[in-house]
Length: 240
Image (cartoon, rainbow, N blue to C red; front, side, top):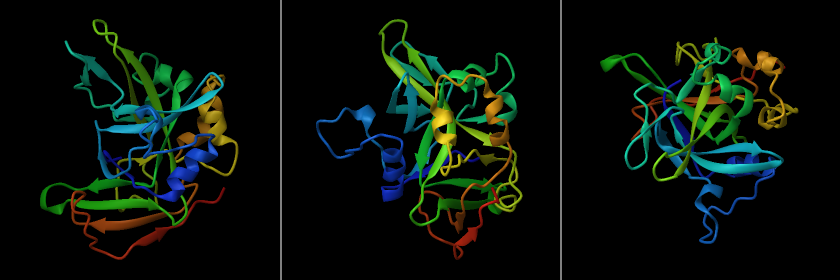
């Protein structure tokens, strides 16, 4: 999965958060920053994004660096030299891997409208934006970590998106991987967020390439300008 997300100010993104028990006031001056969504169409890896987690009985919307592994500096934290904005599905059950412990105790949901993929290199590079259908949002399955600076005491969060094998329907757009899109029409989201579920075998079926909802794919010139090069194509959801 390429390192960019689409978190536009879409009612469906807000509705997804509210369905998970969060009330959002993104423009309120009196709300703490960590309780708001940051609306941006083009979010890069290592940028700050919002994620939903459950700590005890409380669900929270927190801000995190989109890069799971951080290095401590004299004044704060910086993304590690090890690429970790994505966590591969086949590393989740490998002891001592970056996502092993987080997969068992710190799963999260990253609410987005869509994501972007890149295929090819140089002049043959093709950029594709994927978006949820009208009236829908995507609940990306992710992991998070909490950090505390040894000198300043500063607390920070970091997170990553779990990636799966390439989906056959998306292979023409991106042949290396696909993001974990969690189903929203059953108990999956509640189970995923629950810190009491540590036997992760219940999630094995989620670690296979699957589209629980349709996607709209559009070829664009480049992420920064977002000029369409083709008509949008709807990619149908997989059977349940």
